[in-house]
Image (cartoon, rainbow, N blue to C red; front, side):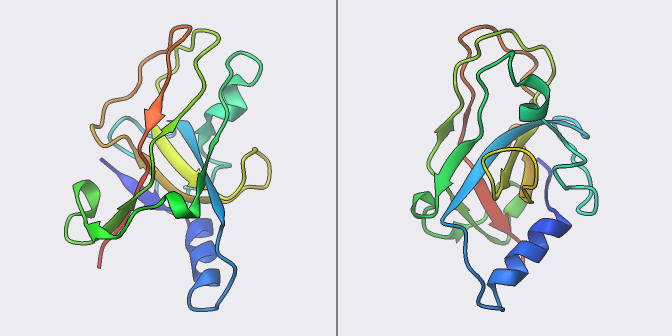
Length: 156
């Protein structure tokens, strides 16, 4: 599994600590198709949502896709890191379910992202990752539901 913090996400986090900025009460989880594959991801420099193909940009009107909100209180206690965060610390949010597909979708979905806004436009990506099993969702049939358990990890 690959994961990255975007430059805009690092800037966002540094605005909170150590500068005593305002934390996000709610973050938003979305799905991405590229650049990258089921086990690779772009660099932190290229990891802005403007350089990723965000499903909301591609499928509005053809699928009932919508980013899913994650309340700050949904994130669990910090634990020993696993997967890409081995040797570090991580936290996991409650599982989010995306709406059932209302149309077929044939583009591989490679992972999820966390950002600050629920709609596309001026949002800032915070964190972009592959699914932990490094397997893309190859396609969706009508009625398919994608469930993601967002995990956010840091290495020392």
